[in-house]
Length: 181
Length: 317
Image (cartoon, rainbow over all chains, first blue to last red; front, side):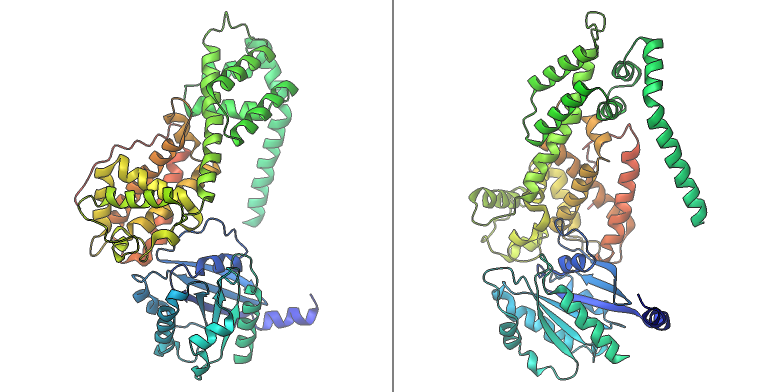
């Protein structure tokens, strides 16, 4: 590490802690993604009752990632975690076509929340390893993501189990925060 | 503080190294003075159960005798292949008695004592590898055996209510996330389902009682999902070896799958008691209460006399 980057790191130290919110339907792969981000073992995942939180270091940022359960019963609690969110990660199971409509509705509701106004959103088209997975562009079209105009957004194809695409998503997060500050 | 910590850990490492280094000498002196080998001293000196078995396990795992090392290696492989039987235990005892040159005409009780320990030690390892097979078997909707077990779980938990279809909102009543439980077993696979089914089948009163309590309007939680999370806790405690105390104390012969299911039932029931006792504000407190629960259980398991009994006392719903 060069001296300059070291200095830069110190300079930005006080405000480099970010609050990242991880949402999506049950079985979308949120917890697997969280563990993948934290480089933890992903073979023993169980359905999330309540929430999980982990801190991940990336490019000088400390990302506090909040993974909230996606079960219908828990969704009403999502709003309790909206405040002070820096980036929203929304995870979609690309193989679960039957529930594309449901996940689109949930996303629409979240994006219309006042507390999340202007917060950048990254949509993970997860489970690309499944043979019947819809592609990222297919999902973007189905969910009419192009109509999002009040914030920066991005869709990223990924497979949380293999880790493919996860790093690219994380890079997008860090880049968009830098641009903001 | 850091310096102190370093000093402490260095000191610990020092004593451990010294102990490992001096162990053969200490053993030699004891063998000369007591005219008993270490295995005999443990068997005669410690009460049966976890105390004796854990020490036998330590002694056998750290043996320097080449023939004994070989015997341990064979037993390890047999446990991995799930082929440990009574005969193999007898054979192992016979081999150890020969290697250690023990006169069983004088030490009549020793073979039985050692055999009991070997059964527990390698039976436990065999159980772990059976559990791993179950856990890595994903729930498969095309497998009729899996489907039958799932439907049986419903009928055991809700004997008076008919399930209207395999895909149904009703699954949420027993705490699955959506209309199809198939995706809820995740990383616990069939182990999660078999744990729940055992609880519902073997302890129907307790299971239905816990289910009713999980449906409480204020202190409710998702029965099946929490159960699968408790499966994970039980599995981790067994894998780490912390649960050995309980299994070594409770098993008369080989610890088997049912012993693990019983362990799960105890944990699930105890979790429910703690959850209600904690009066959580809502389900978002789950991980907080669960880590407290795990801490309690870990502390209990550290006691070599640990023994969890499934004598369920049903309180108010």
